[in-house]
Length: 125
Length: 79
Image (cartoon, rainbow over all chains, first blue to last red; front, top):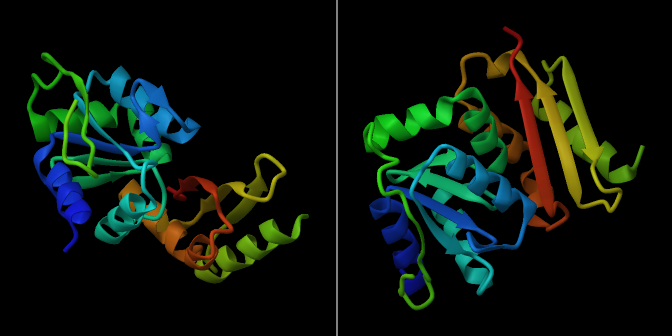
């Protein structure tokens, strides 16, 4: 398996909330990624973001792992929650908070931060 | 109706013959940003992720060919 694929897997499996998006939380490059990010922010979630734009193989490897064709993709505790529409819909119904509480514990908003992982180099910011 | 939206509608109608509503809208008029709405009893009680997965699967061919740049999905059950 490639390094990129391994790093993607590592992010999915080990980050409480992983958002694969176009751009970064500081510089969102697509409306759909923005919608998912805003839904997570509104729910007070910690977010570990991966920008898929630097290399097309990131998106290819990700979709192969997840079986999901579009970006963004949200994972909570290793499990695919969905794309922008699902994330937004879950946020509107209050379901997103419930999922986060169930999987991360009631105090999940405490010290929630946004971080970025570069799956090409493996560095974090 | 635009040819592309008609093609997608047909794919969706084949995948969801029981659907009471199948609607495809070209959101920008550019032929690559679409809104798909499907209302079907098959979605009743199914998690949202699985509902959207069924729609994505029905459109696997245009996804693979890169015809679809952006897809918004709205699924509804009948209960």
